[in-house]
Image (cartoon, rainbow, N blue to C red; front, top):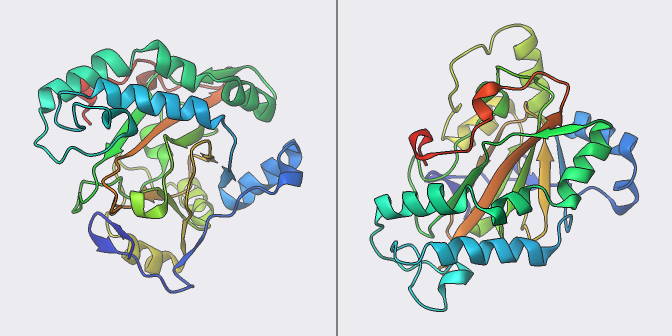
Length: 283
C-alpha cells in the first residue's frame, strides 16, 4: 500500500502507473530529449550518475548526523539506518546548515560533470546552478500531513526568474517506492501551462494539496511511480505537479534526496535562490 501524508493512493490502473525511463537510444539525442520533456514534463534517467558518488555523499550526510538521534552512533550510521530515538532538532539543524549544506562534498555532488556538463549540453548554453538546494530525509513510519512533500509545481516558488528552469531530483541511495520516492502527476504540466497562460494560477507560493488521490481524480490522471536506484535522476520542468510518497520501508532505512536547479545563465535568475539554504528557510 502506497501513501503520501497519510492518504492512501488509488492503485487502480487509471490512477497509478509507471514512471517511464528514457530509452537508451534517446539518451544522446538532444532533440528527442526535448520532445520527451515537452510531451511528458519529465526525463527519468536511470543510472545517470555514478552510484559510488551518490553513495559516498549519503555516507557523509548520515555520518554527520551522529549524535542527533536520527541515526545510531555506531557503524550503522553511514548507511542511514533510523535510530528510532527522539531528535535533537537544534543539533540536527546545526549539522545540516553549518556542516552539510556549505560542504565541499555537497558542492562536488551538485556540480559533477555528469550533471553540469549534461545540462550545458541539453540547454546548449552556459548554465547557472541555483545556490539554494534542498536536502530532505524522511524517517520510516512518519506519516500525516507535513511529513512528505505535498503536491506542487516548482514555478510557484521561482516566479522572480525564468520559467525555463529545470529541476534535478536525485535520490541519495536506493529509493524503492516504499521508501518514499518522488511521484509525478501524468500530463499535469499541460494543464498548469494553460492555466498559467490564462493568469488563473497567480497565487502566493504554496503547495496544492496533501490529498494526492483527490488530485488525481480531479485531473483524471495517474500518479507515476518507480523504484529508484542510487545513480538514477529525474529532470523535470517547472510546471509538472509532483509530490513524495511516505517512507513505509520495513528495513528501518531513511529516505534521502536532494533537489537542485539549473538554467541558462543568460535567462532571468530568481534572486531569492542565490543564497545557500539556511535555517531560517525551515526544514
